[in-house]
Image (tube, rainbow, N blue to C red; front, side, top):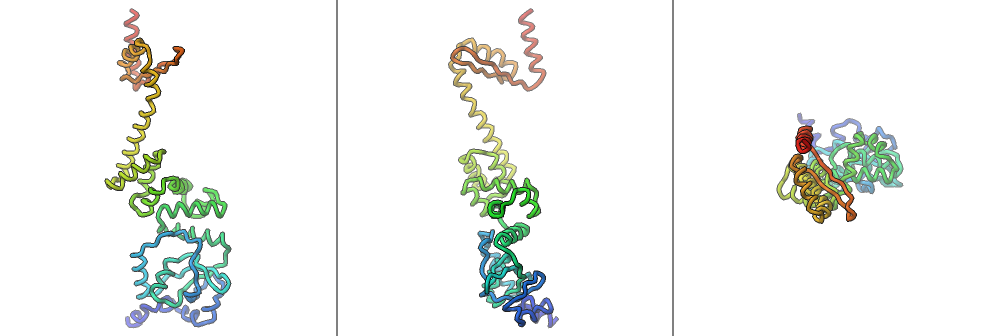
Length: 302
């Protein structure tokens, strides 16, 4: 038990035999480029990843990780690439930040040889696979892979191990107004809420629904129902064109609408040009309505 207690706070070398030898060997300052090896690299020789897909780090979680590293050291090495006499992070920036805050002088790392495009791909894919990015960060990462690595949605989906439809849904989030994207990033609304909002095409309607979701703490199902109601109202608002035409109709047209409409729940409309040409449109909900109308006509003719 004493040996285990002594290991606490001494980092990876206390838990994995042989790593301390790496830290005291020339490899500590000039690590061998072997992807399978772990080397202790001075923290002041490491730079952040310029392609880092994560834009936000949870300060509370970062503080917790910092304290854990003070107690146990780094359990999972970061991954870097060598640039001249320095190193650039490919993945593990959160661990690097916490290790720096914890006062560590060195950090265990894998070293990989890769170009800028390879680094971007590895950084983004590694973060996405860990599933700890918010939905907007994931969407932006997908977009960067497509733009900067010339990938199709299908190729990108294969690289990150997700379905193409999933990738497409994430990319659609980037079409939402910036205010809604911020709500997603801040976890005020979920991906499910975002899908409900995306069912609306009007940006003002999208913003209104988003505001309602946040203020009233609507569930995804409630948001979907509200979106459907908005769409129905929108459909009805497109009817005035027909009504404008019908408001100028001769009286006998109104008589047709009234009489025939009785048999079809008033689901009848008319379009008429100034020259007197046009059409009646009847919408029926069952065969029974048509049969009832037919009987009425036949009785008139008898």
